Image 1 (cartoon, rainbow, N blue to C red):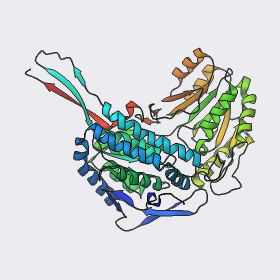
Image 2 (tube, rainbow, N blue to C red):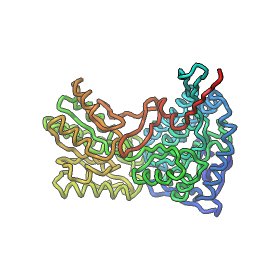
Image 3 (spheres, helix red, strand yellow):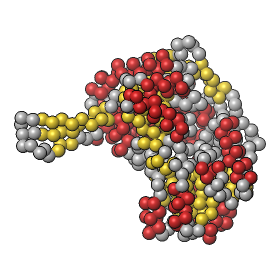
Image 4 (tube, rainbow, N blue to C red):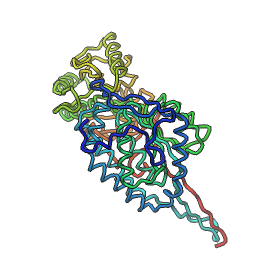
Length: 483
């Protein structure tokens, strides 16, 4: 890896302002999913190291919360500036360990940095209230205070942005935090820690612990010093962590699984819908929590949309993320490839047809051909289970009521998309869809200023926007008598 600043590639964890190895000196390997080649090794930490990181965060909390919001904002702003200054290196590290094309990785770094910039300013606007009282001699004041030591467990699909989307509001609110990055992508987290240190984030305010997910997770959820947990990942793991937080009654925010529908009505601009479908389905090779999982296309435009989509999918270039012109990198590991294969096999066995792709790519490793399936029905696995890969299954529908019922027929409720040019239909459908986020005539909905999150079993809480800092503060009510 040819970095302009090689010190960004760290192989130790960041605890209490020091680069530390595991207590028993054990490590685990991190490989490039596109080549299978070793990138490096990082500490395989567990309970004791995590407990030490929590203690360091708690020790750092009084001084950090005592800073004014403006003082914290200045440090966060320097971190943001450093991320932009080193964006090329951060993107290369991200592509090497995660696989997404370099242009997408650079976009993620800018997206990640935007949360630091946003919350640096938003921390100055954590306002309280004064409330008219029922008694003449009393005054009621409401303040908001930092919740305390926070923990963040982050995924591999957006290894930079999912960290800053949690760390940004925590630090801005006055909370220290312990981050446990995904085992597949720890180097992005450690590089961000390097820049945080340079920006002036004090020792103990940000800690990054790598290693055993069960051991680290159990300490983060069970340790009473931790007041709040934020997790992005699968719904089954989210349920487990939520249960582990229950004995100490922690605040939790969970961004969990999705099963996003993408509806193409008969009045849709089909070219725009195809462009949105490519962005929503095939970005990061289908490995995003808001990726479309089910395409519902009206009977009248089904064949026309399918043809246009297949033509566009045929233009996608699969390859190493560092190669010029590549738009599709590998899946993260072989288990991810096998899941895509199982969904295709089940669909074909039950009457679906492959229009494009359908098999592993000739490049091997985690590469898979971008795929479109036709004649898909609600009884197939792909209708219920999040694929997390470059597979677009096309379902048919004939009425608004029918497609709304099919779209809502899932325990998940993260993101949904639809294309229509009828303003009445736009409002009716948008209000009827049981999802936390709805993209209307767009396949891209993520940004730092809007509230990101789901309903039903897709999670609790919101990230980004002015709502995103709420999970990192607690409300205190002051009643003053004898006035």
